[in-house]
Image 1 (cartoon, helix red, strand yellow):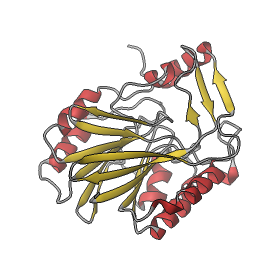
Image 2 (image 1 turned 180 degrees about the vertical axis):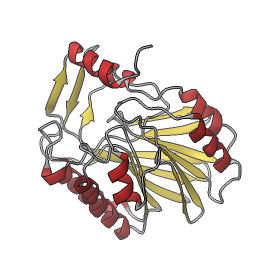
Image 3 (image 1 turned 45 degrees about the vertical axis):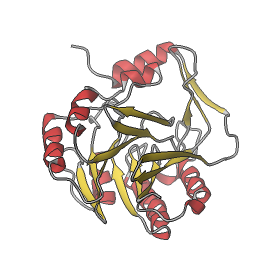
Length: 282
């Protein structure tokens, strides 16, 4: 029997005024469809959205996310935990979703009936790769120094896991080992991430890392080497924290055109994006 149930969403990529992600997907309608499909998930402790809430960084997109996700959460008796991703803009994100000013990375700690959520902002303004600074890791170390009654869940957009494609490898979390070092020997029960638009679950140094599928689309991890390919497809993860460990169920919400190709990026385009949004060369 789980002592905590968390619905994990990621990469909603909403836009203002019903704009289309990549000019192809109405992500606001997609999120609405996904939440409707998850109506039967049962009672929840929390709904976590692990970054890339917006695609254009507009206040309107965050207001749409807030309306849809918080409405769903209320119906399921859940708190909402938001994390920022590389497509998010800190100022409107903080003003709308956190009701606070944006002052540096949007880290936070949330208590949900004794279950602690430690949120880390791995975004690097103007870039696509992820990074956690020494001050962020030290603050996390201080938070974790005292165990929470029901343990801790860390939420960070960029996963501390190897990337599934060439492009995401260029946009990966830098020095994931530094984060894992802080988590070792603490009460952290799971790390929830997004970014890869494809579900993964792995245990790294004794810590369960759950990467949620994207809401906006699904990344084809079997694409030809050097390319990037996205298809229609959405889902979420149900993360159940029990006395014997963590159980993750990938929830696929069927939609019109599932599996239809949205776009393919050729190796030269992938290389350009990697140069523009990846780690600057020294």
